[in-house]
Length: 381
Image (cartoon, rainbow, N blue to C red; front, top):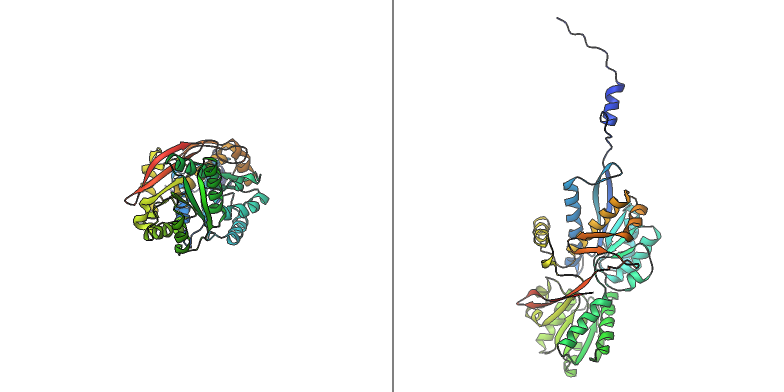
């Protein structure tokens, strides 16, 4: 028996292909999220930590495969650039990310980079969430595109000063690295220290590339302060503490989140145990999911959280939440939903005030015991 092929109605299968025979079958849409941090230079380990937090979040979201916005499956892509912790490079990076078509940016890490870069994002309607810039000026500019998922130096500096008062510190010497972050943190500390009755014996400035602090430390040793407050990053704070120990300066050293990293013991050696530092956020080890996060970060990128990876990771979920609530992957849609954010994340609940700062934040204080960062206390702000 012969079978005769009937003419095919080409319109029917094409229609089925186009509409999945009754169900819309739209192609995946790729959405770029920018990541900007120092990936080279003396604080590259901190910048890479933040960048890896962004990448891990995107990797997990894409693997789940259930991000659907406006009826289309969304695939996220990270556009990760190196701002070198330099303001000029950072503004060039910001412009490139805008030109690349990112819908939002997680960055920058340094206040001195975030502040000038924020104008470029403002001018182009791109949401910027910094995971590490703590200088209050960043959000006080009034830009509706600027958000922060970490506490500020207006909280961190006073927390360190009040800790010093509680430890019966009567006199202090202050040193900063002359950056927007280091100087700003030192300013906030100094203001509160004086208000708490602590005598500031001296104020000195170095720079964020310095390696030799012996002249400053020799002068400070002669002043005999009870404590030294250092405003800067771990790349300089570590050697600063190490040289203080070598010169037999007995004062306890106080520092902020830029110094308070898991890498400090490598940079400071035994001197890390003479340091108390703050992180402008809660203690990661006490947060739900922290163990799994640390395990997955190390499996994917070969390192434990340094300090900013959980913050940058959480910032990605804030962006995705804004996409869902606005039902949009456009810059304007995401930005419109940001002020009403109310999201539980790895680092806690995230809600923003009218400036773009966290409504609910905390400052964690740490000491180092045999080189291991150990929680002292958490102060809710």
